[in-house]
Amino acid sequence: MPNTILVGAQWGDEGKGKIIDVLTEGADIVVRTQGGNNAGHTVYVGKKKYVLHLIPSGMLRKGKICVIGNGVVIDPIGLLSEINGLKDLGVKINGRLMVSETAHVVLPYHRELDAQREILKGKNKIGTTKRGIGPAYGDKAARTGLRMVDLMNPERFEVLLRMRIKENNEILRALGAKGLSFKKVHETYRAAADALRPYVENTVVLLHEAHRLGASILFEGAQGTYLDIDHGTYPFVTSSNTTSGGACTGSGMPPNRMDRVVGVMKAYTTRVGEGPLPTEDAQISDMLHGMGREFGATTGRARRCGWFDAVATRNATMVNGIDELAVTNLDGLDQLDKIKVCGGYRCGGKVLDYVPNDIEAFSSCEPIYMEFPGWRVSTEKARTWKQLPLNARKYLKAVAEMACAELSIVSVGPAREQTIQL
Image (tube, rainbow, N blue to C red):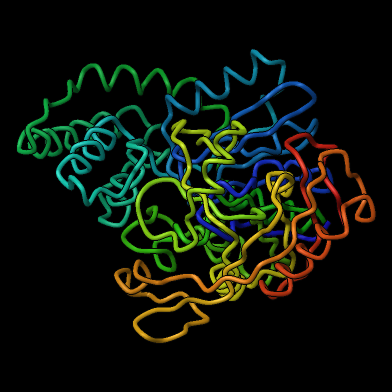
């Protein structure tokens, strides 16, 4: 398999965990390149359900090497919990997981700041998971962050942590929150450092050496295009680059070593948290929630649901350079008589075929819909393209054409075998 970047083409939760798991079969190494434990990738292996937050989904394929790259912000306690949880389920971790020594560390004051700032925003809140991801990336940009290499050095970590807790305690108290105990945080994170030490190394050198030897590498993105700090619906975004460019900066592999970009999108649209969602619709939302679908893997929050937005996905194809599309959750539309697709926006007296950057303008956009006939039969048992209902095939061809990319994968359920590769 060529070196592949996998990205979400919508607002996250597109089903990347499953598609990564499917593609991992042909890869040697899987690399997580950005985000933190605010993301959740759900994978079903047989009857077992795995929810991974930091560890790449490739860990569920025997013999695959998994790398947490320099672009990720790591909560050491969360990572240890995930490692131990997978070990308890019989997954071999040792010798297969590598963690970048230059990845930044999420600390307790990051989580407290995250929560307090959301409270202050009131009705203008972003809808953060309160895992401390934004403040950790903020420290990284401000050059005051602590990295895994610092965590591995006991003397340096103690000095830096003491300084950072003293400074952040003053901010927390000013916000009306309690300060943190240096002793408690230090003891907890020193113990985590000892447990994580065998996994931490220079992953940039590792990846380049593997590439030189002919390894196939899959770069695993978290969240989605419209949560990108630069290209998303700012300020209702995450704090990292979720688009394909983030795979390069978050791993240390240059663009000329990447061979293709696969974009994952649902057959409809969802979003968690605040911010514009032009095609949001109570009909499809109530239907999907009634089916037990569309609840966040990380937060458990009900996702906002809407019809497929071809304008947004076409824009995502452009920004990411998407070559191939993987469409998931097709089975979620099985019971509908008619299916809507947004082909343009009506905004301020104009018709737009692109996503406006002005958040107020985007929030006021009204979708211009076209309708497709539904298929009214279950697609869950389809294993080939021809086994899909004719109207489902027509729908898939149409949305891929509108998204300006080639359709390569269709998912009709959460299990590995519920996957059609074209």
